[in-house]
Amino acid sequence: MAGQEGKIGKQVVLPLSKAVEISVKSIKTRLGRSMITASGIVLAIAFLMSIFVSSSINKALLEKGSAEIRIQLQDLGGEEQAKQMWLVVLSLLVCVVGIANAMLMSVTERYKEIGTMKCLGALDRFVIKLFLLESGFMGLIGSIAGALLGGLLMTVVSGINYGLEVITKFPVVDFLYYFAIAVALGTVLSVIGAVYPAYTAARMVPADAMRSEI
Amino acid sequence: MAEENVVRTRNVKKVFVMGNVALEALKGINLEIRRGEYISIMGPSGSGKSTLFNMIGGLDKPTEGKVYIDEVDVAQLDAYELAWLRCRKIGYIFQTFNLIPVMTALENVTLPMTFAGMSTDESIDKGIRLLTMVGLGDRFQHKPIELSGGQQQRVAVARALANDPAIVLADEPTGNLDLKTGKEIIDLLRKMNKEQEVTIISATHDLKMLDVSDRVFWIRDGKVERVERRADLDLNIGTVEGE
Image 1 (cartoon, each protein chain N blue to C red):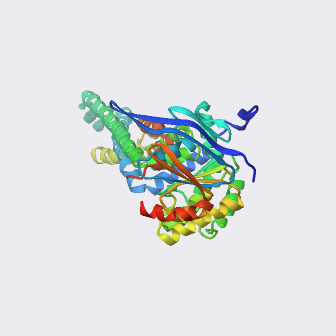
Image 2 (cartoon, helix red, strand yellow; image 1 turned 120 degrees about the vertical axis):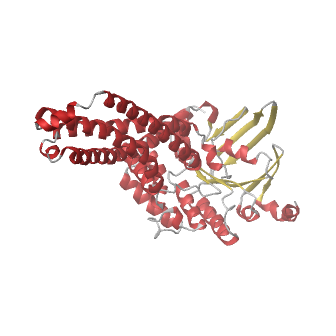
Image 3 (tube, each protein chain N blue to C red; image 1 turned 180 degrees about the vertical axis):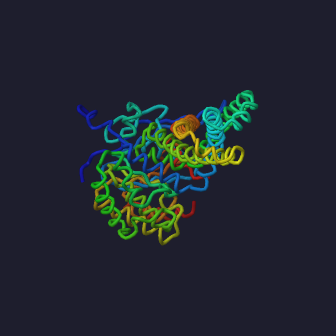
């Protein structure tokens, strides 16, 4: 049996572009479910963004606004903001747990699909890659939606409170900066939430594909 | 046809431990399957048939004994080599079809080729060729949900052949199909067996399957009870139905 070892190779690949394609398809096909999963991140990021935007608008108005508004703003304490920050952190944590939960359900539901992929030669890390990408994309889209939602709402609310000056003195640079932070944070948290479910999925054995009970 | 063993088992035993009870599912299986054969594995549920099937397919490792696929000892392989073996050497067909629901028929067939490192263009060409061969040349853009059971199983047959495997393992391939469609799938498998010279190993309850098999392994109580060649089968089919 000399030379037989040479017959076994090691090269099994899943190019990133293909993985992206598969995970995007996965989200699209289960659009309703994906949107519910993503809504957690939308709300949490909207909350975060609204705090960011309200504080940067207040700051801009304090520096450049009319005297009347400045007096109004000085009455507001910083304590309120610290409390809100805690709420934001909590809501982000809840959202990570929510994502982990939703992804875990999706793993148990897809045991056959995962088993089949493994029968076709998928490595553990392909499965991890697919689940992390899927969650990452949901996080990215959810965070963009959430950041826009929170940012716009807070701008409108400030506009109602302080009038047109909010628009003329709008802190564009700050807005973009916080937008980027909120989107990045939401995406990263979504990926973190999917780590354990992805690991669970990767540990499934190919023979699971043969299981006929649902 | 070359007299070469594509699967060989040496005294394979498998013990499942459930709590304090050790269950011996396989009690020393010795069998040899030659390249290009069409094999059926028959046996009642609980006979160890599925366990044996998983061993031959490189899906499970024996507690004792050796399984050689293409003369390579499966127990010696690491995770990467096992994945490679499943990808290149073995094609799987399942009772419940198991197509990836989010992908079209063509994407399902090309997925194993992607894993094997084939370029997209090449894999699409080959995928269309395979789907045409199984009679689905006009349906490759359909999602599994838009296909009938028989059509889904045809896609699965095409997918199993994607990387020109040495073995195709079919687990009750006709179990979820009606009589006529089941017969069509059996004929398709036989045709692939003849034309592509691929070894087909199928676990089945379906007596129609015996008709086309070169040999039938009867498994009972974790052992090979008997092995029959097709020539001997006609005599015994009456007793089969009586079981």
